[in-house]
Every structure is written in structure tokens, then in C-alpha cells.
Length: 120
Image 1 (cartoon, rainbow, N blue to C red):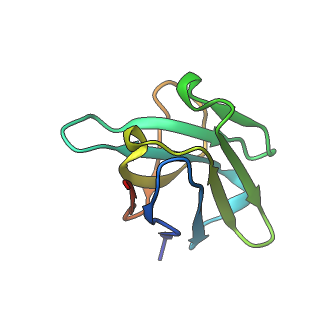
Image 2: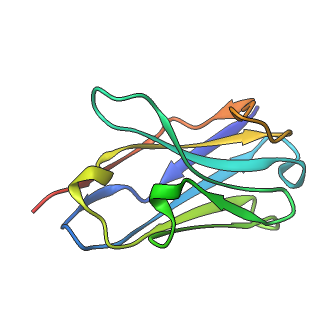
């Protein structure tokens, strides 16, 4: 059974940081490119960052410098470190898995999402 389980979301003050985790199971993690997406209320889901199966990260332009994606194949886990958070980062964050890289990413698996709320 394929699972992507996100955690680490919550309420954080503006300027703060959060680290999201996504633990994968049920598929060959090393063969997959892993992505983080987010969806804010009333907005379309957008790609935040992805990391290739070989460990090379790519970021959406608006996320560069504040967010860091990483993975540990031995732990079948991908992380998203988010710094200097602002209210505009409030969203449900999802991880996803794709064997190929394309635009849009042809994700085969999705997690259930974790809520991030940035508010004072």
C-alpha cells in the first residue's frame, strides 16, 4: 500500500520557521522525484519545490532562498525547511511522487497534506 504521510505543519508567527516531513512507503522511493506543493484557500495548488531521485533540488522562483528541500533515501523521507515565513505562506502543503520530470509533474502519488498557518 502506497503512503505519503506529511507532518510538521502548524501555527507559526510571521518570520518563523517550520520543517515539514513526508515519509514514503509502498513504492521504490529511490526511483522517484519528490515534490512539495501547496494550496492556499481560494487558490490553485502550486509547486513549491522538487528534488530529483538523484538529490538535485529545484525551486519555484518565489520560494528560492527561503525554502530548502532535501531527502534521505535510507529513511524514505523528504523534508521542506521553510524560513522567514509570512502570511502568504499559509496553505495546505502536500508531498507528491513522480517517476518522470515534466511540466507539470506527472505525480503518481500524493499525501493527505499538512496545514501551515502563519499568523500573529
